[in-house]
Length: 146
Image (cartoon, rainbow, N blue to C red):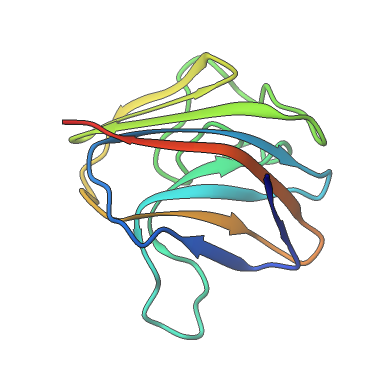
């Protein structure tokens, strides 16, 4: 049971909407990898723009700014300057969103712990970013929090 994304860009969205939740997944990306797990997101209404509207928990082992564990262009670890993940290796990605409090962990290591006020509810989506990208997800678990 591995979900494999190739030949992006493209996104697979949940039908359900989530506000407060915790998500965990095992993720692996190739050496051309750039991808992400979107949350509190909706599809972009512009048919010429493939990028959803919401938060993206980034998967990228090479970007010096928006590396794995960051919330793309919104939040970064305070004490890390690059990824702790590597190409072609599985890692555990955990995302927790409660109200405006957003947290991420990679392999149990805290990454982002921040307040973001842009989006409060939406789908979860997994991304295939570009044609050379191969991204794999397995054991995706989402728990709604009360």
